[in-house]
Image (tube, rainbow, N blue to C red):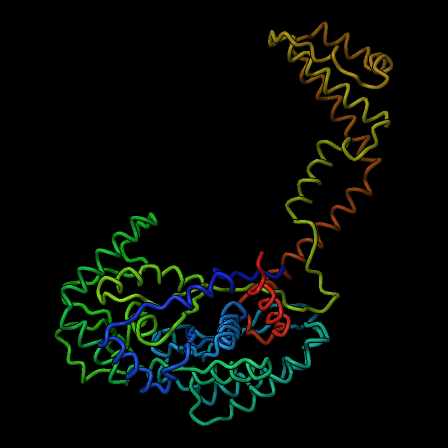
Length: 492
């Protein structure tokens, strides 16, 4: 696995977008100030935002925090990330386990994927199970990782054991605390904002009320833009990326704190927890809170649609957004076989050894010359009896051709007498020759079989080690930060 860092914009492309600011209407500006005040966000500094569900972040997500910090420091701003604790998400902790000289994946589920994350507390049984696994895993680290990265992993794991002792620790809080610890190691400063806190603000309620009052206009714009988006991107699924709004539906969730359903115009918003769906969360971020939003590849795709809807409904320019992600290698123990020729290529070579062993012999080898002679002999008779004009046999430049004709003198005589069976007669000679060549190339076969065995082991190891969604602290994050910095400021 190689480093792969994707940035939709580098600094020289992003800087003009940040400098280009359209003036908001007085009512929008007033709501922006109110929203920021309620969330304790500075009003007069550039605000860089990102966000994700509170899973144990892997590098492809964590890179957004590093990038948010780099940009915020560049523009003397502040960076924040939204913790989407209003979502329903399967959250687990992934391990690379080592036992009985074998590597394999292990995971411990932390969330109930049927309920929203807001009130999901990690119970004592789950905590004890996780602590036991972490302690057992720490014993195995030197069997798995490069020695240079092990101390950093251990430091993080010891911190995780400590925070698991916190009473009533939620799944979302665990994610935030781990992110905070890793960011401190990297001198990265990005503060969390929980969606569950965002929805308690008066500003959010005002957005909800505005859309509820103008629900018919919003629904018309929303559904029309969705249909256009699917048509442009050749999407046949009528529910992707989102379902169209029905006549009485609003782009919000209502919840009892555990389950959630789509909010309707008939629901009493004061009797339920109300959460934004993706489009309404974009409203909060791109219009009222951020000066720049950093998405992953999925969010960046969806936000193209959000932009179209929000521009038409609010008649307001949205803050720019950029996309970033990363896939980086785990620094594994050097003795772990992770690279080899693909098994399908080695299998093809073994098949060639079986049917065409001559390719493994030198050009001057007599057996190889005999095989080439037979191949051209067959081409000659194929052309002769198929009434092709080209004479393949007599056009060849085979070494020692006269000698070969003499070796196969009896065969040539038989073919002249039994011309209809020339194919089977030549095939018999092929088999005899292949058998002789197999005897000379048996070591080649043995080596290929060993390579195939190793290749299959490598492919298994790759399935374990090349998963890009392990927790971010499995990786060299200092190296990731440095490579991101270089790429972000590169002019190439």
